[in-house]
Length: 517
Image 1: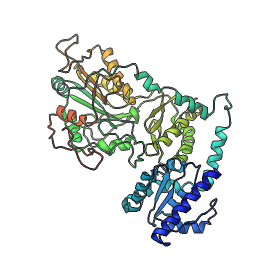
Image 2: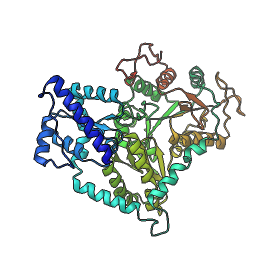
Image 3: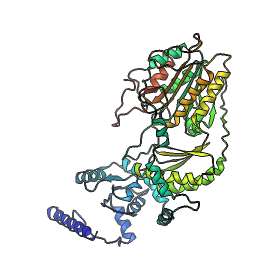
Image 4: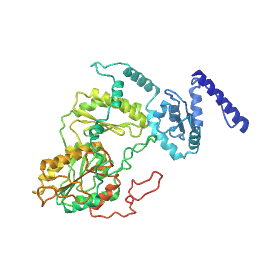
């Protein structure tokens, strides 16, 4: 390392002298400070006068200088820009910094130019991603956290003889994801959904149940970019586009229909997005609580399941652990719903967030082993939920209630749509309901489904639909959530103009595209 430092200093001195010789002695101020010997008052003066801080080592541990710079530029000061090396620890902490590879000279030049010419609005947005986290983590807290983590990592086995968190995390990362293993036996050879066929089946039915997932189906979900740290979490907006809201309202007005939207979100967020649609059934917290308004009712009555878990005791045990990981992971936060505790790292550095999640899950498993809970790991989220809870519970409950309160009319049309692994239980619940009622089998023709039921006068149409082609229990797929408005509007008897554009539609460059072109 001493040889590296000597070579680097020699090159930097030569560059500084060359610049001064060519452009004059006043264009650059060059000073060497060894081992952070600059007093804090001089550092703060330097940070206040600097528009950009560049910290680009090829290898480095934890450096607090960028945190100090961000804090010194908090409001009402004009925000600055931080350039960090992708090989530094601080890169995983500051979400608003520009990330560069110090070995890539052209990249470094490009990002330096971007930092110097950046608009005030972007500077302010980047500062807002970090300032709250930096302000709440003084150096004493960092020291305590590092010592605690070192103690945890070197403590060997736990008192009960189990492995420590690091060993458990390593074992987990080598294992195959449970959900992927379950679905890996399913073939990808299943047909795309024929929207015209669904519409014809819908119009011929007399008792219909529609179950639709919210995030990723009604509302388009944004995947976390590998290097882009997003300010928005999870979805492109709080509400579906107006054309979808109108289609849902039209479907709910039909007395033959029961429409249910299922979400893993909180009751407040779901009601804010869809609570004004008359007659629409809602289920939040992955189906733990649900509300199906009856005709003429204006006030929602929320019902919940008794899942046999003391949830207050679970929270008392889990929240201190989650708070510890939130403190070390900038951009993460804890999300509480009726029957779930979520740790969201969607807007963090993707690699750092995933690494922290790999340590979090085994620690939670060990501490919550006395409770009947399970752990759901999706992209950007770790959730603790009661073991008995899944979206299939509320789906089967609604199907059974509709079948039992329709004056002898059987349910003859089911549409169930979802986009991720948490929706798989909805699909299997549909199959279970059909098997138990012995109403029908599911065909696979692209035209209106062939009547294969015992009672030829009452065919049964069932469509389980995955958003995106993937390994799934669903019988059909659509390419993306962009196809959902087309399907809902078609069933409601509406018309989708070719030029109609949803609020989520953008090609990433700011231009708009037609939804159904």
